[in-house]
Length: 252
Image 1 (cartoon, rainbow, N blue to C red):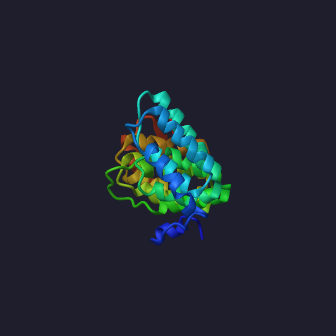
Image 2: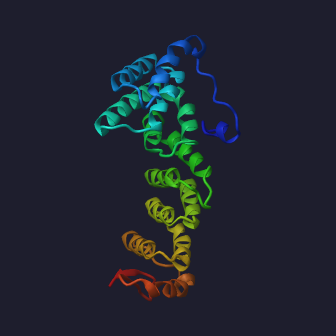
Image 3: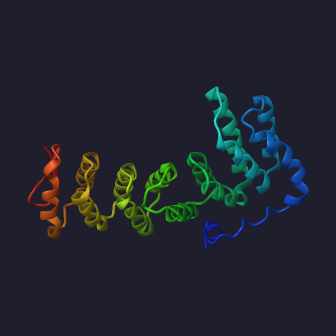
């Protein structure tokens, strides 16, 4: 069972070891860390105090700094880097809080970076797959978290990853489909050719069609013979590439 599984089942994160006696130490700095209107010096000092605690409770408080941005951008970046380092320093004990944060965050840039730094390759892949499973392919007001997870799946490999990514080839959002095509080719598994050709047939976005053609060329794949007629019909609005009788794509 991955660390993400307890979230999908609606369980609460395991209590941080020693969290109760440290709660008073965390409460004050946590309030400052989450206050966009606080003085930058005070907020930075609060981040430092929490980072020094190196507890799961402190890591959860530090994550609040990633819910807003401030000006100037250099200060925003410095504070977030310090908070990031504080969370990573906690290690695997911080992972449940990071995953919980992923479920409500508008952007996943920082939490995904934390997971990558904390976890082993296999554990990171497992959590990415868990996050991917939490998204459907229907309309979403904010697709950014889904986009970032689909893009992050480019960095890991496996049959389970291929299947997870291919699901998003049917997403209603064009940009998600575009990234799903890219992540599918990154898996470099010829089994994906069928799904990609079927997308080519149904897709209205020319940039996605171009991406599929380009991917087939780079991977030196051929369209399966049973799908060749469908693929040729799908190329009617593609001007930069052509599909040869041998099933290979080439540039015009």
